[in-house]
Amino acid sequence: MDSTSAVRPSTQLGEGRAARTALVLGAGGTVGIAYHAGVLKALADAGVDPDAADVVIGTSAGSVAGAILRSGHDIDNVWTMATENRHMFVEDEQAFRPDVIFSKAWRTPVGLARRVLGAGYVLNRSVLRWPPIQPPLALRRIYRGGLASVTEQRGELAMWTGEDWPDDPLWLCTVDIVTGRRLVLGQPGRPRPPLPDAVRAASAVPGLYPPVRVGRRMLVDGGVHSSTNLDVAVATGAELIIVAAPLAYDHDDPPPCHLRAARVYFDRALERELRAAEAAGARVLVLRPDAAEARAQGLTFMRTDEHGEAAELARQRTAAVLRSPAGRGFARRWRTATAAPGRRTAG
Image (cartoon, rainbow, N blue to C red; front, side):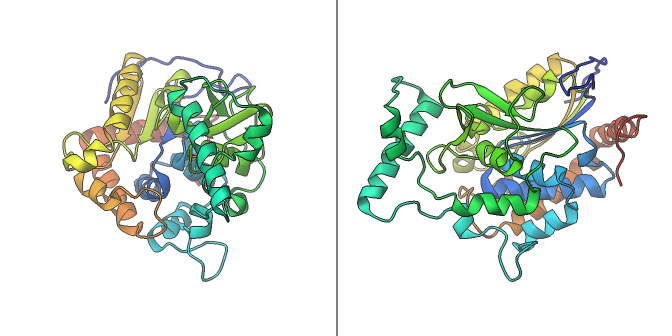
């Protein structure tokens, strides 16, 4: 999509700052993290600095990738993590550790039953919201809302991000299962829990991981609302938006039916958001998997290995998009916008 836009000032970044550029990183499990690694690598190699965006907006896997990016890590390190499954901080350890991705949270059949009931409640509150059941607090404490243990997750995230939020805007999309409303952590006036907890909330897949409590709110993966939450970037008034959507698909080279079926819902939602972005006058560079990428990603989005091909194909595909006439034009505008006085530059 490439439509003429006028400057639409916004103060949503805080302190009177207006957004001109935004990077949107969507949901997609561990495979989505690998996809983002490929996209970020290709952007950086082409001189389109993704970290120079005025705001980075992450959902689920995109919240992990965005937090790592904003925390100052070299994109090549993220690339190595994805392609070689090599841990950057623990010697002889794989990056996507099974005990971090999924470690069962029960020891007995009774514990499993409680987890299943709790996970069902969270799924109901996150997705269906009918009937509007609100069990007593005592019961909710007994029936924990996730099948997986998150004991190792927080420490793993803290190694990458530290506890503090970055100076440059990072917004992480969550959904409050109590109200059903989206909550964007990191926005001015919104909660800013320690960064590992914010990332955990933004990637707490309902049913799989328990909700994360932030104040009175019980937060889950923002993918419940949208796999990209592109509209959050549009609302800032950003003129140039890069959106990486691992769960969508390229309409010019669609995947086979069984792979496309798993993506149709997310892709249709993205199309609606893209139409709204176009109506708002934003220029959007859309990056989403083609048929070969979708085959490499498969249907096991939370796997703990075999990410290298997905990352490499994402890098190749993104590089090809940036070599197209529309891609070259967008890249020129991005470099100009991010090099403007008062804006950060790559380095």
